Each structure stands twice: as structure tokens, then as C-alpha cells.
Length: 142
Image (cartoon, rainbow, N blue to C red; front, side, top):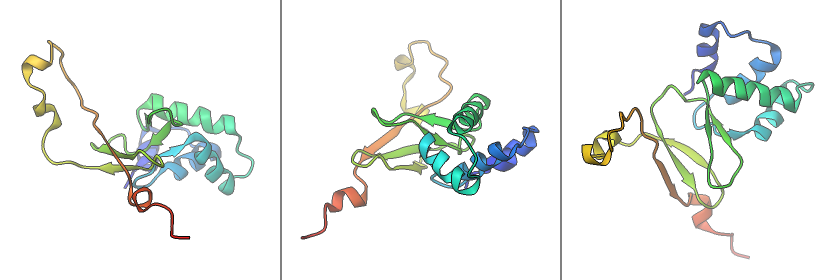
């Protein structure tokens, strides 16, 4: 579960009604919404919120390091509020569904020193791809 709202309060981030509703929409487990999805959900809670306010707030949250921006093979960017919790992503190649996963082992240990080419490696991003159960099931029989 994301603790985005608590982290933002702890930072003393000015919580306007627009910022609050965007953070509330993003807060949760396995949340990977596009900016348009964030806007649609935010507008249900705060009808006067503009698309520009949503984009600006998302940009601020990414710049603060509180939300990660994800790109998945030519699809719209998605926003992950679990930026402070180590995890990887499982992405459906069919519909684009993204799930947080927590593989065992140290992914960094899998990169031998000679393959680091002198880099001081500080992190690893692994994306697992496949088809989700909905996409592998195919259409219902006619």
C-alpha cells in the first residue's frame, strides 16, 4: 500500500484541494494510472479540477521523487506512487496492465563486476512482460 499522502504531509507540501485530490487518486496498491485516468478520477471528486492542474501536480510529484513515471512500449506514461518501496513491474503486452512485483534475490548481484564497465551502479529496474489472465483467456465463446 502506498503511503503517498503521509509522505507529502511529512514534507510540508502545500496541500491545495487540487493537489490533495490528485494524491488521493494515486494513493494505493498497484496504482499505475495515466494522466488522463488521474484527471478522470480526480474530476469525480473535484469537478472543477483542470487537466493542467493534474499534469502540473504529477510533474511536481515526479520531480520530488514521490511518484515514479513509467513508460511502457509506446503507451501513455503511467504514474506509480510506490516510489519509495523497492519493487519491479509486471506488464501485460496485450492490454498494458501493470502490477508491482517483489522478486526474491538481489538483482544487482546478478550483474558481474566485469559487466559494470566501471559504473557505480546505484539501482536496477527490471520489467517482466507477458499476458495477463484476461488477455490469455481470449474472447468469450459466441
